[in-house]
Length: 150
Image (cartoon, rainbow, N blue to C red):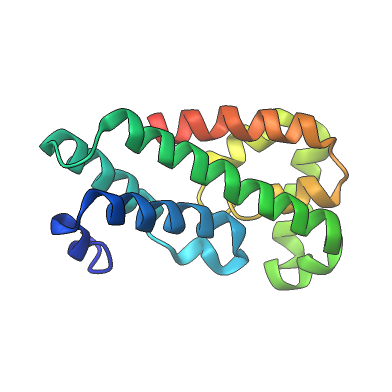
């Protein structure tokens, strides 16, 4: 288990929910967030729910809501700064993600949540490509439920 998450094993549940929410949201909301241990965070939440420390339903809700929140922030960043973000993300990666979002739309948003590396990029590209917000938000919710529940 990641050393960053180890102290959470014995932390009060409210602290665990808060830290896990911040890690999950920050992964997508921050472009360099790709280095955050979100898979380990989900596994920790599941382990603590199985152990009885966390409520499973609440842990799942926190994971989904945090993922959706991070996606929304990234979408807004893409909407505001657009292709200028490509320099930070890498032009080649940006172009591939842009082609996928343009061609597949919401399914690209859903798939992007499940693929490491694209998780931080696809919401920004969707915002930059002016994907309608309601379509993006719906795809983000579906993707977060599938991702957190997997």
